[in-house]
Picture 1: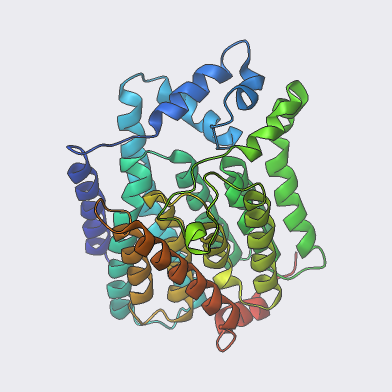
Picture 2 (picture 1 turned 60 degrees about the vertical axis):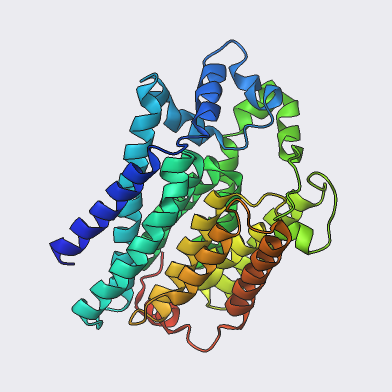
Length: 364
């Protein structure tokens, strides 16, 4: 990759950060400050029972410790650090594509990476700057690293990355089936290992306070602009079936796609299932879907600009702007997520990158 490409993407990331400063920023950072304070208190291992609204994994709290130790500067450090992480994710994604498709024309692919990188970094700003949701940022970054490990033929490093994703945020477990992409007699054991390692991070909290498990049933408002509303679910808060169906359904779909050789679609499909039946319609959810769609598009059709990812981002982002009809936003959200799932399930025509890679990969 030429240096100017990464200078342009760095400038884009910096611009996203600068533009957001006069506006509300780091709006979720207080959750991490409160979580780290609780973790270091006498009731540290009871924090999830005491604060079920803290919907991120123990690893995210540990990662926040050195940042919250900076006091008021902590949120600024988090925004700058994770803005840089966003650039790293683009690099990792581009490197993964180049390793699978070494025959690509460099100049043509650089234009695609620039387009995809700018798109990703703009929506990444919702996570890294506007909200400072470092839990989601860690999950996406760890998943990107796991994909790169898969492409490099390192299945156990992929397990590490996916376990980190799941330990940072429960929805990261949707991507655990990616551990089975590389061949080997124990490939599905790797998936169980991902879930087991991520689960181990919760064990001290569950032992100290069994009520920790109740945090999974924490209810939030069923927003008028959510796709759950568009599906006809009019409950005021989160129905009890939503979280289990999100996790089981999304993971099962991702596993089925990996099983059928469509692993490049697993991330976007898992995220789409989550967004389809989520009662919230937060803008920072968009980046997970965009990342999954870019992974899918760039590996399968690296010579084309990822317009579909741009379209999905536009529908999800603009639908949350003030004044936009919430019902219409919900229908748009539902249409995008259903379309993504449909593409993932029917995209059997060209799983060539996965097949090509499997033929050259060394068994574990």
